[in-house]
Image 1 (cartoon, rainbow, N blue to C red):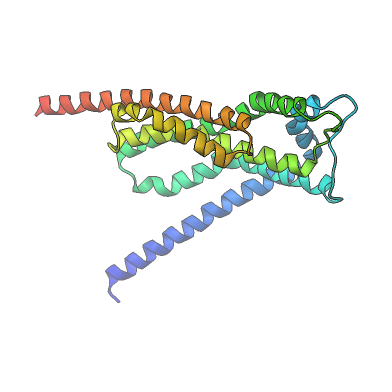
Image 2: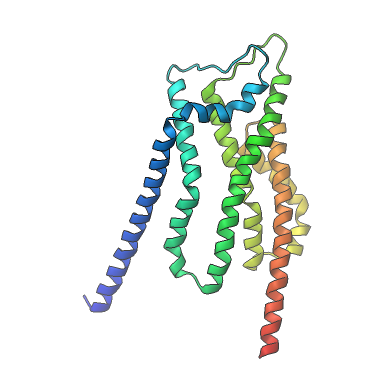
Length: 254
């Protein structure tokens, strides 16, 4: 084997070792946060379930059908909370691994996009917790048939809450996706604007796939998705205008 091949192999091994180290750092961060939060697992669950509990009729409470639910439901929620809190650090580790292979202009774009994506993901979760939950739970309980006592199971509620958090966190990333498509030249803002009717239909289809099967919750996701799509187009127009100005300046300079 030649020295060049040895160098290439060592470089590959070095990259794999670095990737392993960054994955381990990310896992350690999640575990440390989980251990720190585990003592407050019941309080965390109560906080997330507060909109449901406050919407219940007087005298009603949430129930645990499975005997293990009182332990595993808060346990599972605490793990996901630790993962969400650690996500900026996890993403930073990913960024640190791929950053050396990026060009200078790509790094200049990636850093704001990284920060924006984290902020938007958390914004989606906060929107679901502070806006959607209160409206949706009050609506569901208000339409319960007469004679039906509403007593949600804590595990079922947790599955619903985690699904909604993930759906809204991902949906709020739409401006980033639209901006990148325009910046990379994959689409023009004017073309995307003309596709608006199809986008609206697509938002409702995606909401149907990501949320429980009720039109109210689906609309609460589809409408913000559409609005965020429009935000992405506006940001893309600004990026495209800046690109054209830079291209014109380069042509003028030559």
